[in-house]
Length: 258
Image: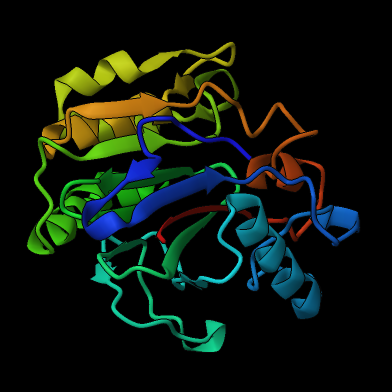
């Protein structure tokens, strides 16, 4: 489990905020899902996923809280969470926020960037699934806005961009580059030429951090892990697909007010 010191700590009313970016290790699943696969949307045995989610909360040091995740579709939708739901009732969203103690909000990723946020003074937390499409579409700004509506101050929000596919592993085509170039010429700095002519290497972490800064969040930490290249630690959609597989595991990133 990977953590950032700035996100953990006391909150208002004697509560505490805890978070963790889970690796793929420490679970009960096997095969493609070895071993801490937390995604019900994978082809894994649902009982294994349930057991893995329980273990993840134990790793977090919060075994008694309720975990909720959304049905992620690379949208820009962020929702407040005031009560837990069952996995089969998960709403479509790619950002969750909460000010309710005892409810852990989680994001599932396998190359996309998981982003966890907290305003300790206000007692407000947020989690966003930020692949290129969601980040480009505004999921980070919308998640921050939902936090603000619960009382968070953008200047106080601490954010951490967790493990995702690194620039050295993220090759994209000209059409991808053009989409970001059209959005802003400043985005050109997010790309370096790839070995293949007409292709580029894209820095997702830097783009996500930039969008957070543009939304008013100044305190942003970044992981330097690469989910694609580190097969001993992380699930990777791109790596698995390139190996000819149709399914893949999902890592859980979670934050909670205890």
